[in-house]
Length: 489
Image 1 (cartoon, rainbow, N blue to C red):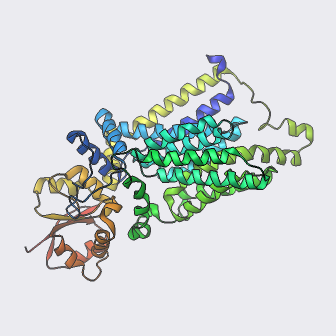
Image 2 (cartoon, rainbow, N blue to C red; image 1 turned 30 degrees about the horizontal axis):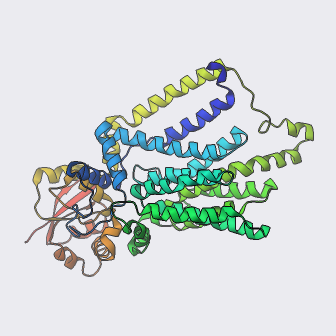
């Protein structure tokens, strides 16, 4: 086997090992916890959640739990190997998505590898252990199948079962339909430009209709189809939740999106090749969606990465011919056949790399590292205080901590709000913001929901205001969180 480990293959292995290492992170995302709690509830009750059991504000309200299968998978992973198993499975899903994207491309492995590495960096803003990661993986598979389907339509018949699975994992399937629509529109424009009928357009349109029917095969029926539209109607979601807002390009970790965008358009421009309609339309639409909401950047990266790899090959070839003589150009290292190198040295390098990866993953996912990450982001001390003191009454809590509080304190305590924005709707989220921003009538909101204690960030506007309120007293405080209790009935 050693003689098969060429330099090019070592480079490809290095690419995916690097992506895996980047993706291994402490699983402390604030929304992950309520998904885990939902999986735990379904695991023990042997039934799919269809009503809210976790809050006191909308207790018993009908809940279209579109991620039920993802939640069961996450909780099964937790039962199997704790948070470490969730972290490793998330990293594997991300790596698999980029492997699928790599298989979608052709040509020199170095051009493909560096193109997809840039795209992976851009997508890393949303690498978190929640059902969204299944959308990331299935979107990559969908893009691959659509590309293969251009040459062989039999690949397209895999789309309906793909969407049936997707509809039970996460409502992000709507991104898949956007991609289908973009591809279909691009093919239609190409057909009109060529002025000849192309049966691929009709075939793809028919399969799209089957995919819509496949989504209906879920425990909630047609409501899953309506869920994405109900989500975007929630006003506070678009104004105050970071992943639904436009990217802040002053933050360095968001800037790879800009690099990917400029590199892709530069590669297309210098390639001398005509861009296909079913490439341009998805690229433009997902770029637009990413500029509106950060959570769409990973989908743009999956669209742009293979396009960048495809056109960068032609662009670099054209630039090398312009910069060098024809003989030098033909020997340009990016385009000649990769040299095999020394298999023994390559194997040694791979072994050392795997050893370094094992060390890094072991340190990153050590119990002490996970506890440290949890304490840095979540109200661990406040949760311990509530468990010990058994403070009675309803709770008002920080939105970002709602999922963690459900995981740690349910069923003794129910939350005021958490990451299930569509479930709470405009009324409850509006009441939450009124209290957090201490707007007129904030005390009436607390009375309305019979709130007896408040758990928020130590440096929040509400916490500073409550310190001066005679009807509330501070029961607990640390560097992360503060708990206020109502003095009177």
